[in-house]
Image (cartoon, rainbow, N blue to C red; front, top):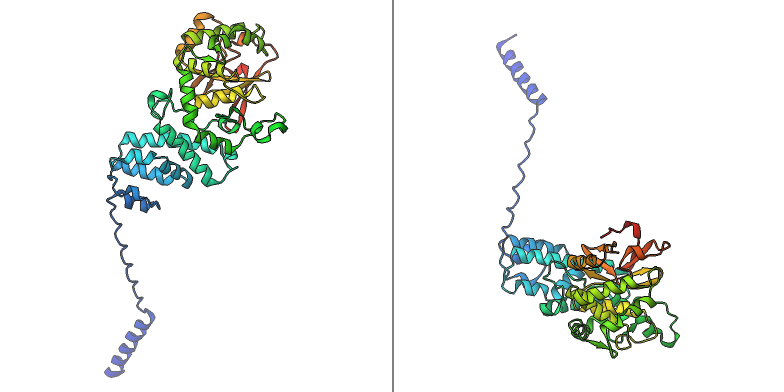
Length: 384
């Protein structure tokens, strides 16, 4: 083979090798993402969460503000509207900053109220969402504005008052009748129904209800219908109402009288309100039992909550009592007290104060709360 032939052969081999191993184009590197914007103010932080709120523009931006805004952004539209329209947010950020304590207070109040509203939704759905939101915001606003010394428990207390009790939907605190009796008039068949419109009326009339209830609650000499509170809650009353008990109401009369004389201020307040509602001064209409719901409304207006309980088909208020009240009652008799522990509070049914006096056939106590209630076996109660 000639020298030229060898050269040509080498060239061909070089070409063939190049063809058998083609070069693979390298991908271009992806462009770097733009840097995350640095958020330096409360308004932009809220906007990043989908929350447009002009009132946050001047709020000092720090860790407490971020926590507050984050919680605010997590609320439903209705609940955020209630917090805004009630003046609660304005109250907290009026100095253009929010502290850790204020942020915690906001979560506590709003969270508690939100739970109440969710519980009462079956009743609230009777009216439009706007009407409900307006009323619920006004309700919170009333509790924010009322003087602390005019409430037994307020929104700054360790124990928050209940803002939306069932009684608000069932009876009218000004007309002093069951809402059903007002609606049906002479055709009322005694069935009691809840009405969201009645709740709205009670909230709108909060200040009138509050003023009257506070005067009675704080007056040890109050006369209702020409009778003293002591006369209205005398042994004769408890004897006439001694359904399901074996002692003709004697223990209840003595326990309640002791609380009326030496019990806590909140217990005395509820007993005075209840006694008034036994008379025509306190209740109107044809249904005597409206006294229970009216006591619930009156107590609500001064920051005390009383549950409605039923034993042996008879309903009475269950009065919130303190540890000192329990000690006072034990000093009268060592017999076990009939106490309901509900929501970290103690409640004493007004008509039945001792478990030992219940008839053997009475084994359940029914408690009304929210839109329904619960049946609690007497045997499940903690004996005090």
